[in-house]
Amino acid sequence: MSILLLHLVVIYKPDSVELYYLSKPLLLFSLAVFFINRNGFTTVSIKQVAAALALSLAGDVLLMRDGEFFFLGGMAAFLIAHVFYLLFYFGQKLKVSLAALAGGGAIAGAGLWTLYTYVNTPPELELYLYVYGIVLGLHFVISLLFAYANKGLQWLSALGAFLFLISDLILAFNKFNESTVYLSIAVMLTYGLAQYCIVLSINDYLEKGRGD
Image (tube, rainbow, N blue to C red; front, side, top):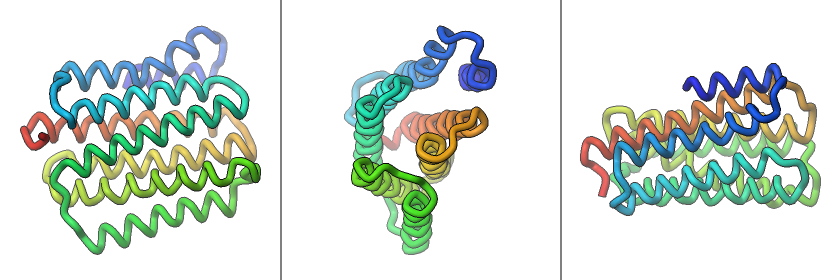
């Protein structure tokens, strides 16, 4: 959390470019080190989460650069990261809940509607953004089923996926509508908390011996 706070301060007061380029990658790098140190690198489940964190780190690095190529590359890295999170959840205990499916689907749908209605997405990027949005929405819905099936900190997975959705909506608005330092801070605050919540939840689940 201290690294996240440091990065937020750097965004607000961009006096050091070097510190900016160092602090952002450190967010996911530190989470990955924490996760692997606590769980090792042995099971399929652990490797799936580690892959999601590594791809998120790659996405962070790519999005630090300007240009459509880097934006699409970063978005692709995050999309595959969500797929690895989904693969992890599908390999664990899930419990179908109509309320969770309906609520999660409604929130995911509201996110897509917000993207379509309020974000000035360039036409050439619309398909990529909507595909990404659908995968992120699915991540949120499945994380609800994961939380519903398990006790403990697993509710943090759903909270993390929800914060991920909020972060990416703010990111899209900040990039394609009006860019401000406060929106940039909001993006990284919600994103950092999202990844932290997801990792904390999954770590708790694995340490209790419920992962494969």
